Image (cartoon, rainbow, N blue to C red; front, side, top):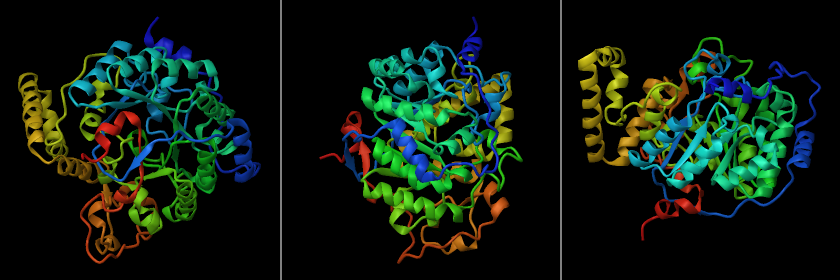
Length: 463
């Protein structure tokens, strides 16, 4: 049987719950939290040391294939999940996944990995891959909707295979979560999964995409994290990446203006701070939260300093098509130094790369020269350059006149083009300090970040 057939067979039948405006019949957020805690139970989070020392992450990432048992309306890969004909839809083989993981260790020196699908728990060889990663020193995390974790036996199998932790996608409470992920009963199964993880002894963290319906629930999602024993909570802006970049996918119906996010997010961050729980906010302008919470704000220039985020060097490689499809071998490496040139001159570069002889030579030259130059440069400066290229060239972030008067303008991405075309940039509020800031660690150096035992050898300052 083909892998694509196996993947399709393993997908839980999809019962679509159309996303749309509130029906008016939802229970309150507080009542939804009470019900969630009845399902998930309560307990302490694992105890790990923390640090304010900032070092570049060593975590990689991979995508097994865009096959999933949910249809989150904000998903960056929703079109690929819906289309079986898309080259990234089918799950890859175990052998190819293992080859990617080995490359992350040998070439990029990663020691942890986020494994994604689609939904990785429905990929049949997942336990074998987790075991392999653990054996080669690439400690595995699964980014998951946790539906299949409502089976305790599955959790035990992951524990035995050597899973490091789970990053659970909590995109609302109760009916709001089900409506956003477009499957009835998803929230209940997810809460059962949290209970099972805690009982089996597997740490978990939360990811929450701040789409419009979930904004009023952010404080109660924070309370859920505290009471269930989550290790970290990430709040992510709903961004126009990948399939979401297509016209018409995002609108005022599903994207919340930043002014609507601010107060609810500040309250959620206060709850987490009072509990001593690490919180991270991705891809919002720095001025959108209260000053006390700017230490939790991660734009592209700050991402590399989060140990649970992805290394830019290996991320650039695994995001290439050969590493995301079932068929074919792996591509060569992607040096950071030459990425800026390729981004700025993408069309002529692509033409050169397609020429049979010259293209192959250009690829080899780019790889060999680029890695040599990477080794000569200061790593922090190298990653910062790459961060700016990602924000300004690839993702089309921009700034307004108010931003030009801001003291932290050089370490903030600003507003995505898609966002300011919908809402403008009137929400920007210049941050005025005694002097301009040029160090991306200016705020985040005051955040206490969790250091898991496997990372203690490199995450703490050298004595």
